Image (tube, rainbow, N blue to C red; front, side, top):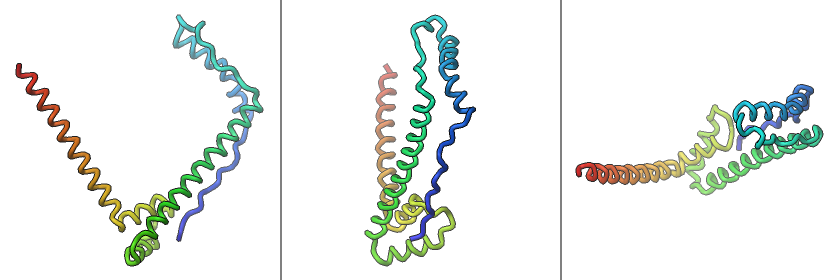
Length: 154
């Protein structure tokens, strides 16, 4: 099955400019509190600064964790897409494969799910359920409007 590999981002680089911005954070927070809450400025205290090395490690850890979460999510979507694909009848699978082979967009899980659901009927069912919910919601709104109109006649 054709797919585009997810690009790995380069590691976080800590520049002198980022360090200066981090070290000036406390002064900026204090100035913002003084400017926006002049009568209560003495009651608010900006968050204390951590050591620069601790902040570097925290940001690197958060960047790596965020990237891993996105990679895991993409893998989960591929697993779900493949499960939906293999649950289809052989003739439907042939149609999916033919359309996926001609797909000119990115070969990502979301696009593959779109193609699978277009052929297996899941998209039509979801659209039908959506229309039922919207119809019920419109009926509910109309009933409430009618009730409000009847109250305003008195």
